[in-house]
Length: 381
Image (cartoon, rainbow, N blue to C red; front, side, top):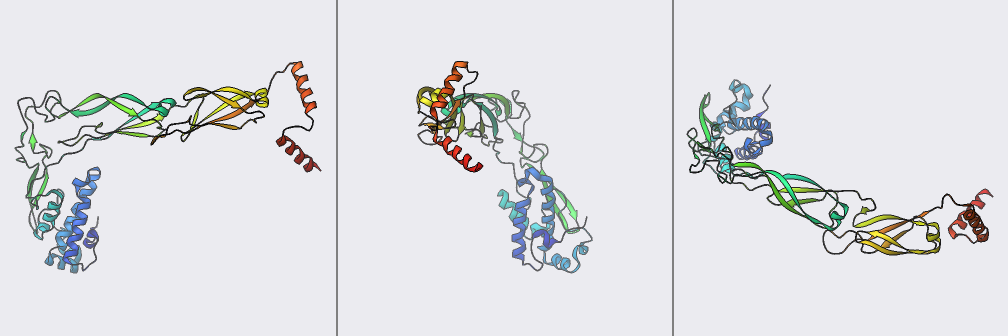
């Protein structure tokens, strides 16, 4: 695979000044450093190597002049000192580049000469899906959840070492967390660095591990956590429980627990924001003459007046009988949709009475029906 143009790698124009090249290198190195791209470390390492290689050439006036005249052929394909590890600590460092970027990231001495250990890492967040009843979502409740999670081992206080012992300095990296190795190249001796494989970059080893956690410093447990569900939550609401997640690493704080709410459907009620909807059936006689009926609400039964002559589909309101506001005081309303039931399986006497009622009504029918009848007559004329 052919190498990319070094100016293109750093994102600068040919003829860029030393200051521009150095600034571009710092920006690109910060973006693609493998330790800052844990989720895509292999690709980042390759890009970081390419960036360091380009900077070694362009930051050296003599090499830069050769590259400008002959391109990559000037170096017989060797292309500088960015071989192995996370990129060279040599040539570029002589121009002050990698030392600066190392200090920027880790506060070390730069150039691979300082030590660096992985710092504290915050624990992972956890998710718990909780299904609750319609009424529980409306008025809230407190629940106790059994959450499986990783916690700091109480026996060793997270050190991983057995009682009476402690972590010791890693003999391979001497507590630095990294090991260095030298490599000779056409441009000189280059010192590279990699994470110590014996202590995994911590600089410490455990000779006598804790029996309870096996030297990990953490244990898998089931923890009861009390969660307060506020009144007014709805489907998809999320409740954050601070420090309810996994334990941190190397002294890092724990993650959080996020409880996602799912509300069961109700046999009678539906929800529309903070309002409650329900449908109530009434008889033909009740709708015609009016009546007082009992209506179910979240607070229990209440008496509601059905006005005389109400039509099927009409909606009546019960103020303040809806869902409490999630933030602030007050509640929504309950909207009651009236469903007028048409009589079925009438006796002969009932049918005769209805016919008599129809004949007696004549033109004195419902205004809405009269208007429709008039329009129908005009249509056929």
